[in-house]
Image (cartoon, rainbow, N blue to C red; front, side):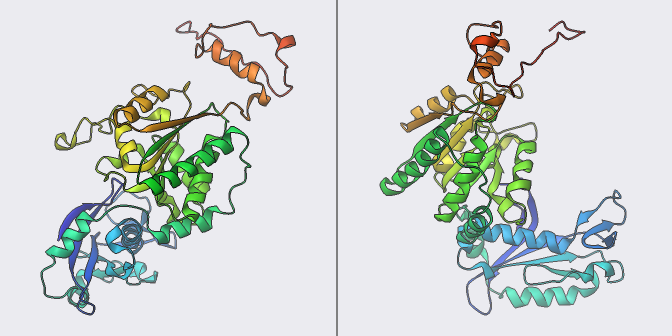
Amino acid sequence: MIVEHRLPLTSKRIDAVLAGVDPRTGGDSYVVELKQWGAAESWEGDDQLVAVDGMVRRPLLHPVIQVRGYCEYLADFLGVLEGDEGAIKGAAYLHNATEHGISDLRALRQDERGRMFTGERRGEFIDYLRHHLAPEPGAPGADRFLRSDVRPSRQLLAVAAEELKNREQFVLLAEQRLAYELVLHAVEKAHRSDGKEVVIVTGGPGSGKSVIALSLLGELSRQGRTALHATGSRAFTETVKIHAGRGSSRLKALFKYFNSFIAAEPNSIDVLICDEAHRIRQTSANRFTPATKRSGRLQVDELISVARVPVFLLDEHQVVRPGEIGTVEAIEAAASARGLSVHTVSLEGQFRCGGSAAYEEWVLQLLGLDGGGPQPWKRETARWSASARPIVIRPSATTGQ
């Protein structure tokens, strides 16, 4: 029994995973078990959402859907389950519940990855476990489960390729296409030579960094390469999930956070696309990280380590919060310490400010982000674009800044 098992590359935990031998095949067998509440009912008639007695009056996910999601995630990311997805089963055992107390929850269809038992059906639950777990030691299977390599499965990549192939609504132009092709070339080269290379793409707001990121994710999935997208921003990641992952909950699993790779094996995936890489922090540890897991390792080093080709897309002029240190220099220094080649592409073109490079430069100088300091706006010499309007920054009434 593996208690409080952490799902790979996430902060979520499963109450218990039972590892053993399948009585029918003799192969590994894993049952994800989830304990939940004493009584619950459907939320406003929705069979996938539930309201739980004694808890805050808000909807929660149906336990069958939750445990089914855990099984699908493990099948999508654990190499030990590759080609043997039937080895993972899921059951929610509501040991404090009665059949009457959760009668509404029975409306949802159940399957091998999503079964539900109550305390009144304890005997059925025991029979279910005996059906999937033979009376033989499960330690070897548990070891394989815990030591499994972590990477997107071929099935998940096929889902990503299918979902993303018709969603590339932008044509990649000039340096955007250069960056895209350079990454694909680096992936092929790393594969042939069993090597590792780093790609950095810089550009301001609206220069197409995220378009490149999603285009790469789709193409790499079509090629069968293992690729993940990561950012340091919850708001940004959730927005990307909504737009890129709509229609497929499995596709959303490809979108991670920078601090997801603390314990990841080196070179366990082909490509890690680090979007908004200027939000990289000094380390992945935070105030909730146990002292025993505070290695002091640089976050940028973790990101470079996990992939054959780590790709960093960043805006050198953007710092969102204190402590964010993602710069070209920091990434190059981390790569140099490993003796790795670094390829850098600058996205000079951009879609905002009406395409006026002069206006963009003027704003950078005004905000102190470029050398020379603020300069007067010379409309007659700047090839003024009708859609580009100078911004007005007024002093704060309280600070004078």
